Length: 155
Image (cartoon, rainbow, N blue to C red; front, side):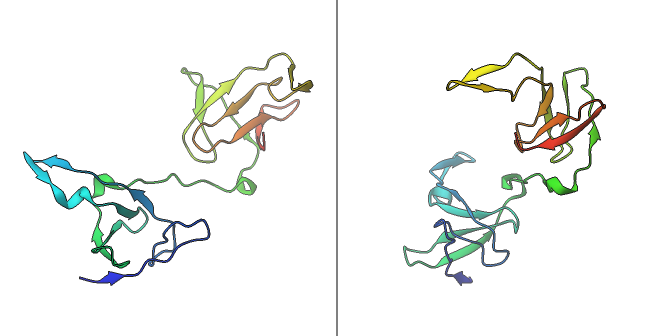
């Protein structure tokens, strides 16, 4: 049993001593496993998806024991490409009206161009031209004028 004292980040979350990423907190709770109450998972856990481990505090001592995480419990985050590395790209809607995001690979929604809207007394030109919007990485790809290419945009 190797006990570890976890450090906190600037925004008061625990960080993994191995990789330095912030740990995700799972509050646990009493669960039934194979017809029996599983008290081992009743305590809160601090999970590192990158390393595949979780930390559980030992008797309110401030020291944490490390355990391997089951593969089905890991949350794999999609790799997001930097916006500087994305060249202008041809994007085409598929049968469902969506296309893959060049930044994260998830499915982007197509937003039709519409009329200028008044927001807080000012004109909002944000949705006047057709564009793609990714719900996963929050990227917006707008069409480059006079071409079939789309470029990443801040909004």
